[in-house]
Image (cartoon, rainbow, N blue to C red; front, side):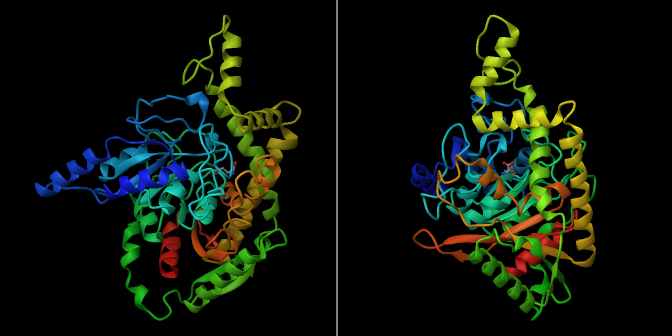
Length: 456
Ligand code: GLN
């Protein structure tokens, strides 16, 4: 009741939700009854979880922030959602996002603009801005987002919460509306590292409905948070931390750089050995990402033909039915990506763009491998700046894309990364939060969670 009251009170200013469940109290009562009867309840019993609206839910609409899916009710739950329900979590509702996850501000939703709880005139980041704002404003305890190029980590930084992007394949993508399938991952928001780690544990693991989900054993992430190391004087002694030189460069807000430097000094106090590392191909990540993500999305989005899903615009002939349904259903950013992707994939341009970008992707993956052989974790800012004003980059897509420089490389390499708050910069009435990013080796979320937990 408290959460719902707070949600009702804050939602008119924030607009973080596209849909609020009407079953919250009923589900809570059901859990109470089970506890009274001494029946077993899951590890997330009664925990209020919000879910990004590009993750399928059988009892609520799933629009992916697009008119093309307006009113769509999936006939199934995403695997992550099914696992949440099995753990006893209560689904609060579906959160706002940039259409199909394409954007960095949540202004690209076809339905509403979400505000940043720290300053209502600013963006919460994106594309999972609704999920980040909801945790930040305590409209829920934890939430799910998705991260194709930074969509969990950048909004976590803008909203002052913890954001966790798991290794590609750690969490099933079954029921996640596809943007760029080789990069997409479901990720977690929480107000602490422990919350995000416990949520990750609940949704991880192999799934026969997603062939790219890993068959590796899922470690007991929650046990990290009761480790005895926590009480030692230098709990992170011997841990090798590499600060990525290319991420503390000219284009980054000096206040962000000094917050990240503050975080690295704190890691040194905790016993880490901090050095600088270079990822020479770092700046190639952005163009490679936008070519690959657009290419994959142009193919993935071909399924919205007005016949199989969502909205249909009537026409007297099949091709015009497709044309009109897509013309009306997709927003301008999505159309631009489809055009870019189709261009990059077309005969004659394929070698120059798509193939080239794939080669760059291999380079980036290899340079991370070299850096992570010498270091246990790598560090960078989560974004070049704190949250900016609503409307500021709306008509300048290149400026918006440039803001993804800190996060896209990690998706190209498929690695896990954790963003956590490390300070405040000038802005708004109380200052604006900024986060820093810890990057780990594939499937080593455990180390990130341990370091993050001790750090905070
Ligand atoms: N901002 C990036 C994009 O628009 C990343 C989005 C995401 O991770 N879903 O593609």
